[in-house]
Image (cartoon, rainbow, N blue to C red):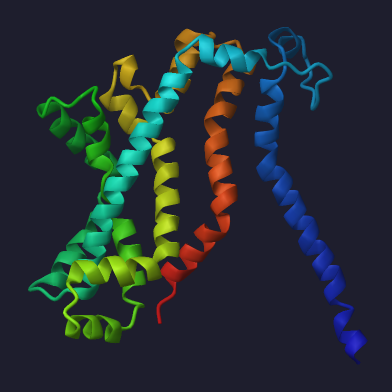
Length: 282
């Protein structure tokens, strides 16, 4: 009887793995094609009337061109500065805001939080226009403060962290208050360590968001000294290699993509753990 019940599961499992393998190929193929194109020489790539899925003469010259034809190193450094500072400030802002909504009692807290959530309904285009006018009026175009300020908070991350904070038993907070612990000390010594998986997830997601940011940096900077890698890709197309040198462009894209791929692979378990903790209450 047991063998009869187990037998139908094997074909289903085989079909499931086959579908997962097929989906993995579909998802990973663009990355393979990007990497393959980046190691093809300009002449061999343009001589392929039918694209080839391999190359017998790989070259790294395209990667050298990626750093010499345009200041890609400066773009990477600018992006790193923008990402680190923005993420650090945002973590401070959202942690304090989430703590206030989760633990502190003040008049109108629920109304304020509803208003906060309603901001997520506003189209992003309207926010970009408002931020652009504000930053321009403050004379912050082509500067790191102008790049950073509009990105130092997130309603979604505040909500995610607030839900996580609310899972921590109230008894811990009341016991800490009886011992004379301040709210800030309780936040730093109790709530932050307990919510570390969620904070790690938010940090990684924010880093990816900053690294991939395109519209705002493109809008607020026209000085090459403040270009991010997102601007750099466009600069590569227009001034660096010319639109026809696809292998060199792919080499630059590989260089830009590798840090995020490594980040995700290293912290993928933390991301899943943090999302599940933030989405599960009780």
